[in-house]
Structures are given as structure tokens and as C-alpha cells.
Image (cartoon, rainbow, N blue to C red; front, top):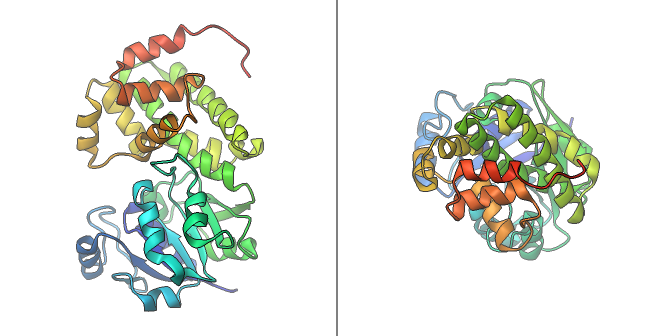
Length: 331
């Protein structure tokens, strides 16, 4: 079986976990990051104590500062940075990535334009770049320790995507393929917003019925918005849509759900972010989507999340407002 040589850019919990998984699948892996201090510690200790403590990194994974030799050796580059750092990472790689596959596991949108990250890749690296995105219902720690999981690899430009998906798969990870780049990207970014809403609901103590309704109606907003942007409807009922939405909205490992839970319990947005250590992707996503007119008052759940985070609307008031909306057809 043909295997890949991956350069994984981003040594947070997700990049570290994916590196461990890709190595397990038999690929060569070089892990690098903007954070050279933590990278050095991770290399020396063979453990990312800052982002993925308690899980040893296999000796076969190379760790170091990005360099031309590491880029040259790689056949695929996997970007695992948060959305605010995505353009910086792509720009740093620049022309050195010619003829290489560029894949990202970042779940979000461009913070300034609200556009898909694929647009950033094409603008910087060119429209002929072999690009793809991986997304799906996975938490880093579970993936790293080998618990069963599944992801979707979406691409229209990577040659033989099935072979790439097979090279990433192992006895604990199945990677499926899709050609719906828009749907997979949108689902992965938008589900974080709904997960914040679900967390707020839990923080307010509104119960299981309310959370189920939020998730279901949130899926409808995801589907409606995504299809307007060019996504396929069926994508939102797959791993990167419904699957990731349910995972992120119901499990305590979700940082977006945790943010909502803290806010629903009475903490301010600023204090909640400080307590989590950094701003979860859903908070970046909803700001970018509202700023650029993609999410509006016509999308009541996601727009309410924006108002709670950035306009000071009280969580209880937001919930009351949603329940008082005019009754209409479900779809």
C-alpha cells in the first residue's frame, strides 16, 4: 500500500492527535508549529503536555521547526492551526508547496471575509493546488489513544483521493471521501456555533428537550445556509454535518459547548474565554459570518449566539426570544 509523508503544521491537541494517528497508519510524519517554545518541549519530552497531556508521542514522529528540507520531503501538508492563523500558515509555506497535496483540519472561516478557507488557499497558492479538507466527529484525545472514529476527506482537486483516504485510515480510524468541499467546510465551521447554543441551554438548565430542539433546528439553519452557498444537502446528514454537530453539542470535551455552558451559568463572554485559555472556533466563526452578512436575523439560533457573545444579550432573554418567534412550517 502506498503511504504518504505528512508535514503536520500546528502542534495543538488536534495536530498532535492527527500526527499520532497518521504515524499509526504507517505514514512518515513531521510535526511543526508556530509555537517554537512548546514545540521544543514536546520534542524533548515526546509528549505535548500543554495541549494533549498524558499521551506519549511515538518516537517515529519527527518534531521540529519548519524548514525547507522537511517541506521538500513531504508529499502532503496537513494544516491544523486555528482559523485566525490559517492564512499565516499558508503564506509561510508559499511556493514551496508546488505539486504537494494541501489538506486542512481547521474548522472555521476566514476571520475577515467570512469566506471558506479553500478560497484563502486558492488565492495564495493558486487555483490548481491539490487541496482538500478533513472534518468529522472526532475529539483529539480519543483519536490519539486509538478509540474508533471516522472522518470525511473532501476534495475536488486531489488526484486519487481514495488512495489518500486509505493511507490515513487504520484499525481505529475510517476516512471516507466526498467531493463537496463547500458542504464539509461549512458543516465543520457552523456546528461550533450551534454547540455554543447547546452549551448555553445546558448552562441555563433548560433540559434535554430544549437541547434536542436546538440541535435539530440548528441543523436546519446549517442546511439552509450551506445550500445557498453551494453545498449538497446530503452532506449535512453525514459525518461533517450531523455527526460533528451532535458530538460537539452533547459532550463535555467540546470547547464550544463548554464556552456556552459557562455563559449560560452566568459568566461573561470574556471571563469564559479566559477560563478556557483561548477563544473557541465557534466564537470566531459567528463573528465572521455576521460581519459579512452571511448570518442574519433570519437565522435565529446562530444570530442569537452572536448577540449573546458580542452584543450583551442575556442568555435567558435569548432563549425567551427564540421561544416567542412566530410559529411556522418546520422546513
